[in-house]
Image 1 (spheres, rainbow, N blue to C red):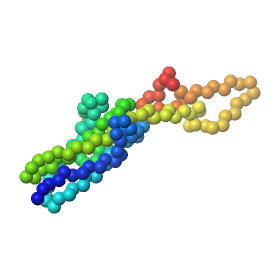
Image 2 (image 1 turned 45 degrees about the horizontal axis):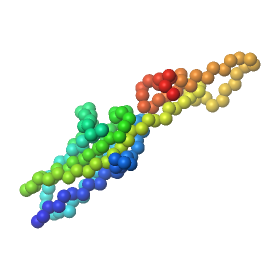
Image 3 (image 1 turned 90 degrees about the vertical axis):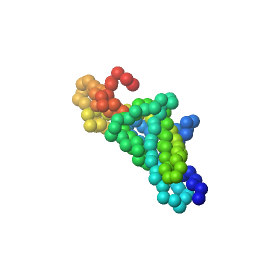
Length: 152
């Protein structure tokens, strides 16, 4: 019986010219569907490789890259376009590998501006008194731990 390679579908499915966009403040989750067309018992191994500008990215050991699904917590990757390649290795009487890639672009998250503490929407002030608006003091940059008020 002839063994045919499995078909791999990745979700989300982006390509190098039209990558799926994800904000840096969001988790990345890639799901794979692996379809087999055979009646033999097989052994399968999966491995994810992540690249940026053709350079392989090393992730910390907490991120599992040997599962058919990949989960990367928010703020793990910097801004840019990444290639996520899943390789499925089939073992039986003959070995073969099948790979499929998807592309994701990490983009900045919009800064959340609060003009006043706790985002107050209405302010009253006494007669001839100064009103100080300081959005930098209470604003949030979801992509970074500290909000840099000098960057707009």
